Image: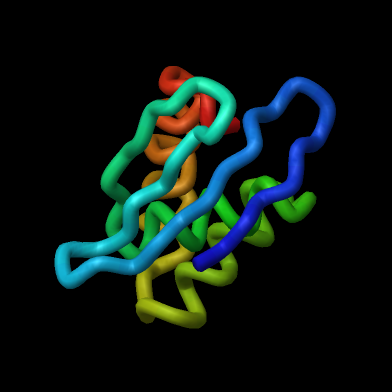
Length: 87
């Protein structure tokens, strides 16, 4: 399980691995989300201070994606994570 520390107005998050991926809990709101491996990596990287380029580079090295595809995936994930208040 991962615990994400509160940074500014960001929620306190915890995550746990399941057989279906990962569950991330916003402890302050009592809401949770199911994330796949790459979405969790994106969330962790960005909450740890990484920028989108660094996060895309992680996806390239871990999953063998093209840089363009990785940047697109990070952009799409960021938009969704921001919409639900995880970023």
